[in-house]
Length: 48
Image (cartoon, rainbow, N blue to C red; front, side, top):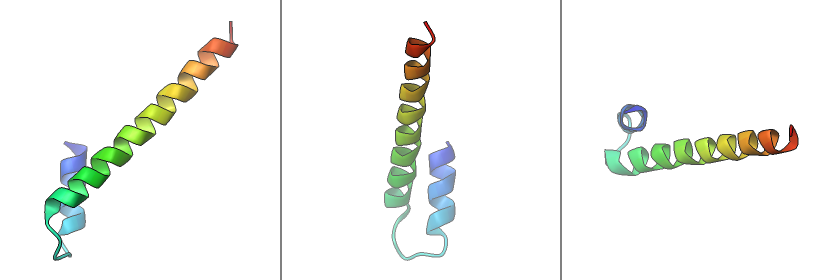
C-alpha cells in the first residue's frame, strides 16, 4: 500500500507511467527491510 501511494505521488508531475515508480519504491522498501533484518540478526548472534 505504501509503495502504491508513494508511486502515485511521485508520478503526478511526470509523464512516466505509475508502474516504474511503484516498482522502485517497493524494491527500496524491500532492501531497507532486508538490511534491517540482517542487522537485527547479527545483533542477536553477538549478544549470546
